[in-house]
Length: 174
Image 1: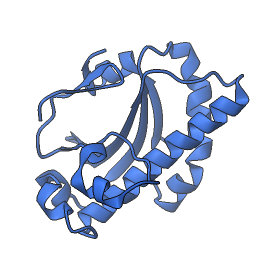
Image 2: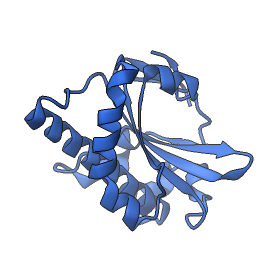
Image 3: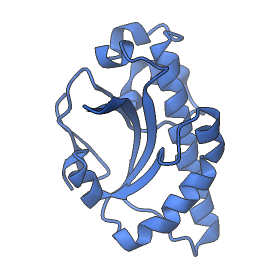
Image 4: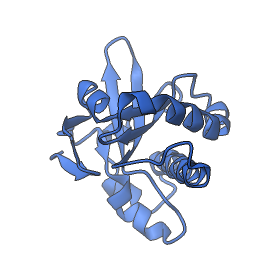
């Protein structure tokens, strides 16, 4: 899949079979208003473990925890996007929507849901690394019920900046 730009970061390139741009998919568009969703789903493969689906949301900024109202609203919006994308991912893999058969990449269709890992990832462009821990803590608290319900594990919720995204191979340019 060709690289694409979200929140000022260039994501990819990724294997066509491993990336699903859920935010621009016909499946998501058919759902209609009122459902917010993350940008994309990406299958990451390591030789020593089962594949993992990364549910990714990109942002160009975030409010500081000191601005409690804005910060809590931001966390709630990201929680909803990541949770909805996880749910839509699994629904698509189970062919619960009529459009998914034609648009879900092969890597997702052949993924073993019983063994696959899932990570809910927020990437913030230009965010200083020192500002990430409060966001990480808040996102883990906000997504605790989702992580427990799906048995995602202690490291399933991740908040990173553009530098860490580049280091992990998510982006090619900030």
